[in-house]
Length: 128
Image (cartoon, rainbow, N blue to C red; front, top):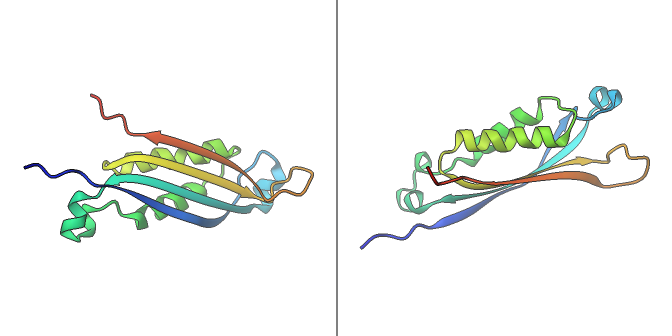
């Protein structure tokens, strides 16, 4: 009898970074707070049994990748968010789905606003 796969959702919530993204020169000099939320789906059938980090999608490494990419200045949130999601799929072959949301806190919009956000979603194409 074949074992069924168990798909898990992993959430990294409200990671906060200080970075220098924006189209305005002032944003690239002064910087701003950014919040990142990531949702991942992966098969956890093997790590559920093995209890070994080598078999799991290591979310410490997800955090490290996110920190590296958010540290590289971009003009657009679409660009930095795209780099994060690209790196996740490049580095985690067992990743089935990712949702990455990057929020710029208190953006310079000429009025009071909590944040502006970009969310990207991607599924791994399993067909050959």
